Length: 171
Image 1: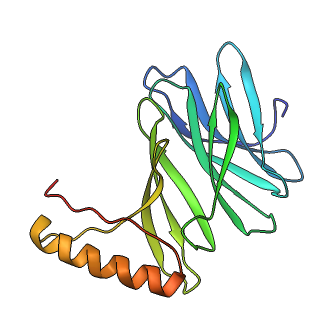
Image 2: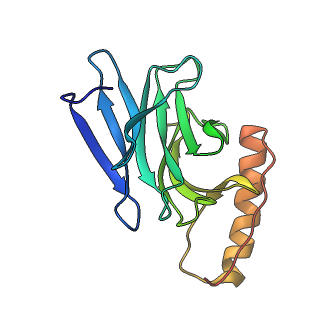
C-alpha cells in the first residue's frame, strides 16, 4: 500500500504505537499494521482469499486479528503475529464463515463470531492452546449451565458430526 489510499483504522495498541485496520488498494481490501517507525505494512491474505480486514490489535501490538474472504472456503478468521505472520484459522466448528473481532493484551486469546449454515451466528473464544471454542451464555449459574452445556454439546456433535468439549462456571 502507498500513502493516499483509503485506510480504515479499527484497533490500536495500549500505548498507541500500533494500529490495525484495512486499506483499499484499488482492487481489493487488505489488512494492515501501522507503526510510526515502520509505516503501513500489508498483512496479505491466505491462499485463495481476496480480501482481509484487521479488526483488533493486542495491547502489546504484537498480534492482529481479523477475517478474510473471497476464497474457496467462503472466508474465516485469522491471527497475525510479528514472529509467525498470517495464520488462517478458517471457518472452524463447521461454520460457513468466522470473524475475529478482539484480542487479549498479550495476543494469546481472541474472541469473535461465526455463521452456521442455518444463518445463525454464534460467539467463540480462541486460544493458542485450545483453538476455537463455542461460547454460550446462560444467566442461571454453573449448576444449570453444566447440564445445559452437556445437552447442547451432544446436540451439536450429532448435528454437525463434530466433537466438542463443554465447560461451565459461575464467572
